[in-house]
Length: 268
Image (cartoon, rainbow, N blue to C red):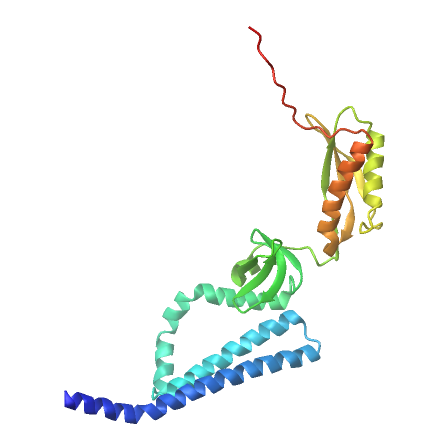
């Protein structure tokens, strides 16, 4: 027992300085890496680099520096870096197969940065989700959903799928379908709908709104109401028009059809 205790003491005396030094290198290294990443982003910001590229390059720089720091710490602990590199090289194929998804996501992130289908701040629909682009990272892209939830989509899937960017053109068409009774006067209804959308402060005059009969449905005459607005005003215009159309149609005595439930009493 005493022999084992002596061996432990010898090992502690021998390796404690290396462990403490490696720990110090790790702590100081992480601090310096964070400082370098922040500094690089400030430099890119001053030079007018796109914010999307700033975030991507900042994340990439941070990962590269952390890998180099990890190798340095391992070497300080007494692990031969040449042997370590040989082990990594031998395991490279297995690691590559295991990380196919991550490598595909990294490649997807690079493709997004090259072709720029969207940028930070754009309203995008992709992979069945709609949200504002918050941050493009090395492996994933973060969105803020319309209900203020965070959405994270892998870059591989994102770059290979369909992407609808609502912010590219700066304007957006609001598509509404309004049904009225067959008894309603078409010209009068069309005029009411036109007055509602053209009087809205956020509806654009160019392109002009489209108001037309869309279809003769089973129980209603459906009108296509298509005003245009700036992308940022889409939901304001949508909700305001829906409310104002209902109010103005009621004032004009134009009925919006809805299912009626009739109670039939049986007499015995």
